[in-house]
Length: 273
Image 1 (tube, rainbow, N blue to C red):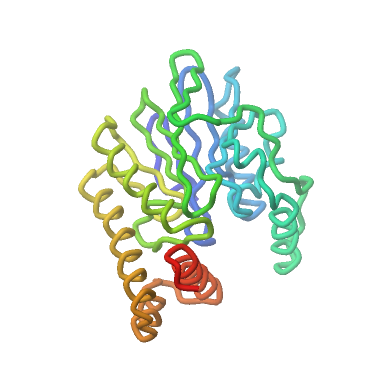
Image 2: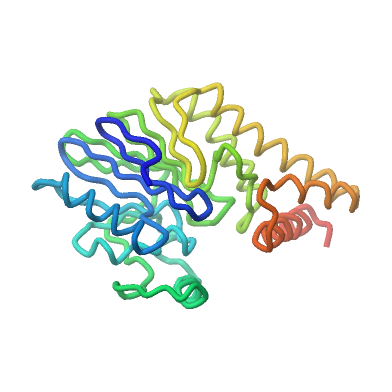
């Protein structure tokens, strides 16, 4: 379904995990971000792009390589792909592909396009790297922590900031890469928001926002959670660790797995194992 729409941006939100897929239309190009989840949802995005593209080139940008964010890759075979160098060199490409295949099988879903990990045409390898498409400027910033291959995208002309799996209004930090990197990415987000001429934040999950105060609240929400978990782990306070797991709004086997990953990374990085 369409979560948000204005003259340049359409945000589609899946029924699964409140996951956002974004289509940005400028005079110069169409940019599709993380098309996902279910085949009919991806097809809705595809039909919308077909209806508005005219003769504009299409770019397909992946914020990171988690399987839910790359699942719609082959629905747009003529698009130029954009991703980080770490996405291009991802060490677990086959694992991500197998998770897509397992998702389809577990849910008895027929799919049309072949299942592949994205091949990256335009590789982002430098902090603040720009891609200019006519008068449209795309600027990218490394965003490790959740995963090693994460990127922020700022579309300068429109003031749009696309953050992948950071700065959700409801989802707590999920650390599959590094706690220290996650802290640094939150610090970077705080710095960037003070310099961006921001009109719209689009996270990978949850609600969009144009309110800097709200976005700063989300940054502090993530930082506060990580600090409390760090203290609990360092003090070996099992009751507090268990309590923090209960702060995930949709408790499930998945959030339990995420909590365990957060705790394990805390122990590993702060010398407790």
